[in-house]
Length: 140
Image 1 (tube, rainbow, N blue to C red):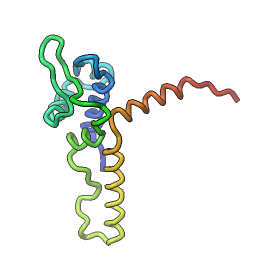
Image 2 (cartoon, rainbow, N blue to C red; image 1 turned 90 degrees about the vertical axis):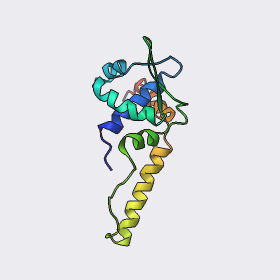
Image 3 (tube, rainbow, N blue to C red; image 1 turned 135 degrees about the vertical axis):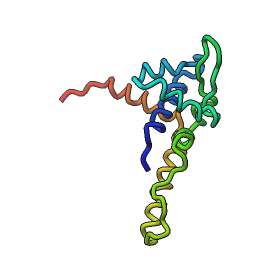
């Protein structure tokens, strides 16, 4: 399985919106500028996210996008599946030996488990862990 830029940038959008929960709508332009991404490409990705109910759009002069739910309830798997489709490691397993099929199944299930049990809130918490780790000074 390879996560393309669709999945990676879609997760970037979702994380930025999760980071701004409670602050009102955020424009795709501000996300694009902050992350040095193409605003036009983000516009293509936000449509499927909106259709899936992950984000919602707010119209008007101060409009933009907001997360459509609690970051603790939206998983990385929700975002990745919306933009990448089903999680498949091997296209066809019928002609594989039983041991190989079992391996591919275990790997697929492990990937699904990580994506489905990692929320946007979890990912934001990892950023905070890194910020705290950057604050320590070690002397030898």
